Image (cartoon, rainbow, N blue to C red; front, side, top):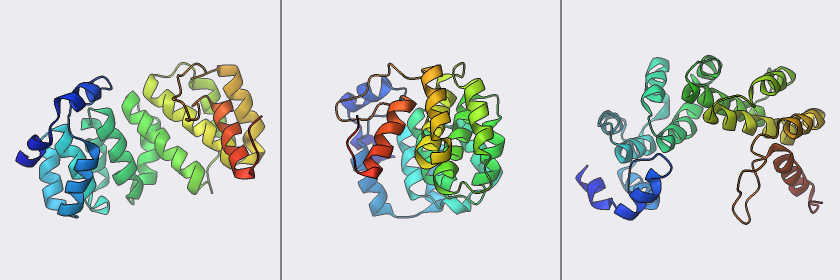
Length: 217
């Protein structure tokens, strides 16, 4: 904790706080510290219990994902009060857990928008990597019915899922494009120069064109 305190930079904290993250540690330096510490499950658990955002991010880098039980991961997600901790928990820990599928199903239907967003992130992962057994047409039905009025967190994740269905599964591409065009979710989202817009029709078109090796028209 003393070492993390020494890495604190007020300028970084100011930027992070605008995005809801209450820490001021450069993530490159945080990763370097994690690399030096290597995997330490007991230390990771102690860091998590501090409720300090930088300490929790470090914990997620040095923990052993498969060591957590299903209920532990559920409790951790509900206590992950900042966006970066939430994102890293899902990406670096839950996705590598044997409980990922069970949690995906449970979280997707949760009334808490942060939890529901995590469920949709896990669904997007399955759409891209393990689509066998998923009802893709049914997912599109749900997205079409709920995405436009969803809170920001699950809306973003559902939009990602919509785009990934269109990118990965040619047989559903036209429908995914149509849903995106009609709902217009994130259509006006400001994308940085050189970055692809998160608006699903643009995102799908861009990624498919790249894979096919032709310029976007």
